[in-house]
Image (cartoon, rainbow, N blue to C red; front, side, top):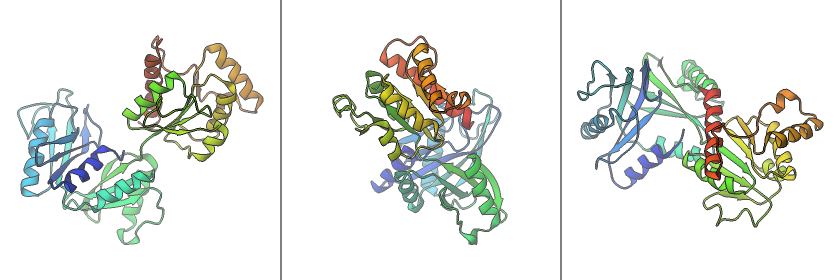
Length: 335
């Protein structure tokens, strides 16, 4: 994901700091963090991110500071039997291969951040010998022909399955990493649960959009820092690109708002569709949507009653159950 890692790296460099990045480029066994996880350290000892879930972070920071000093990139492996950094071990018993590099050229960082601001994902190809990087937006289909067919095939493979990997391009080991735009959550209904859910989703890095035509409900005082669209869902949702990185939750408990929103959601590629209400309320909702022509299999995409069953009672607890279900659906579809 294009996230705080890259923005913070550029911020530190612009402030006059020297910076180095550690990237997980391979794992074996039960590793604490997936391939592509990153950690960044500045010359003042500040750091962000994680490559081991906590068990080797201090040692990695020390290595990054060393990289800042001499500027030479390198690869190393951490495992439970032999830690090349410190006498610590990965308690999970796995193995992590890491690439360390000093950030000297910020061109690629600026391009990634620019793509993020326009909602685009990208491929980063890193030459593991030189650290040189090539950025290819996932929306680009006309790849640079000078890179050759191997490069084009690798980018297309990464675009299709999103799994980071190492491959040889022109006899050089290259790490292909998918940097995805933020996930998006559309919430219909500016109710009390929505106040908790929108804040929680923002904390998880989601772009959040709240839809409600009732301007006394959808106020900035009730939803600070949230993008609010004061319009009927059937109109508002048409203004938004709904794709496989979008989750939609309807919370108004009013068919005039919920049903049109669900109709638009079911016609999209959204990875998650949730609807608040009791089993009785949801059964009535399904009947109304069936009359609109939706089949049982399509209607099965709706998670209703919304949220994982944790016995939630308060708005905060219900928001937790919904957010947990969204995360679960996304991971099941993408792991």
